[in-house]
Image (tube, rainbow over all chains, first blue to last red; front, side, top):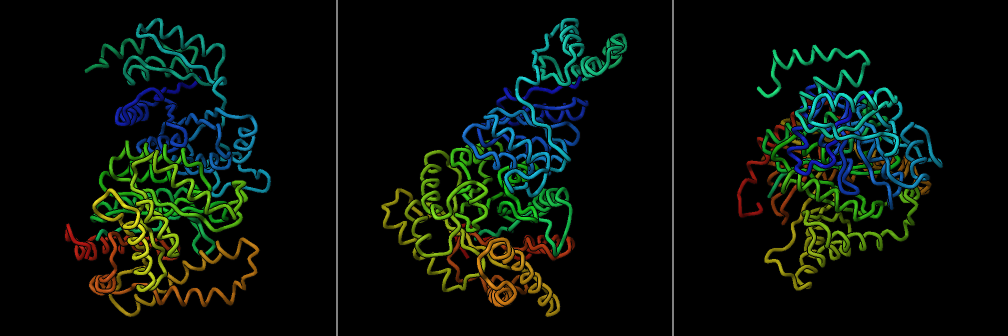
Length: 197
Length: 315
């Protein structure tokens, strides 16, 4: 299971950027961003430009907008992000079909995206396909949450971290990825290299 | 007078193929280079559904360029408003302004390619109504500096009445440009404006700094080549009935005549007399090698910009 850090409720743009940089640095798999309708890919583009590795998951409101416009914005974002784009789409099923087809590099009703996505295919998810959880500050409780979703099994979990990004990376990324995560090593690392120093 | 550069179209053309990923990385490095050399602004351009990937989504591209820089202004030159939902455009512009205060300019145009309206299921015959409705909607929804791309006096008057800036396309003679500016100014004055000064005027010019006749010929060939791309957009993809082969030479000859190519001092002299606030040096052609493009960006910043560096005055 891969963890996606939720930045959708972080109001300050500088703080969002800083958290994304830390997620990038410490190996969080993805960050989830959004914006006012029409600005979602603008926000995602800014985050993609200031990071190098983290997947940029853009949460898009697809109501009352031509699906081709959305697909074009996402495709340009994927070029900027250099294949690091993933989409959470909220909108009509017909629009989702159009967007998914176009982001797979296929024509829809005679139209094909130009530029095409950088990826062979940009993943498009509906909100209900990806669970989300507030990770408790208590490490044991946070571990239990991670274990529950990992063993479900889920492919992704959106988390709102109450602790530092480095702590999330140290204690939760490996646990989410593996059923034999050595918690003792992470705890020892806290002694050798305390998070808050 | 401010000096900007444009138009970044992010294409991979038949004449100069490249990876799209490289095109978007070049946008960022070009914006950083322009900023380092004191250039006022960099402008992007939009089209849809063309084979060469001509950028169809300017706001994310602007977001990337702004995020990668600290001072340079980024503009859309122009975003084709009838092909977008105005509320979404306003929201995107407002976020860009929030992320990068006072550094984003919203240039808007109507569009002219039938296929682009078909893609967006819009009727091209309604484009003027869509443009006007969009401009009215944006006025109440964003404080972003807004420029309107125009090529006729009527269009200049519409922008003037609304108190919006002008973005004049690149191949007009000085007489035509000044006529458009006068129409814009007169319409603004008649509108009983609340502002003390008229809305700004920007001028796109095909331009290149050179040191020799050989370089001048090379630059003019790049300008001509760039209009092959535009002719393809306007004529090649649509069934317009235009004889592509015979018309392209005429068009390229006209563009060459209006291009401003010379030393920085010669260019400054040529630009003198235009009553404009901004000149966007159109250097984003597809033919020049990267080294030539980066060199001219540096020279525009270091040699041309200082010749207009007189706060409070236009020239």
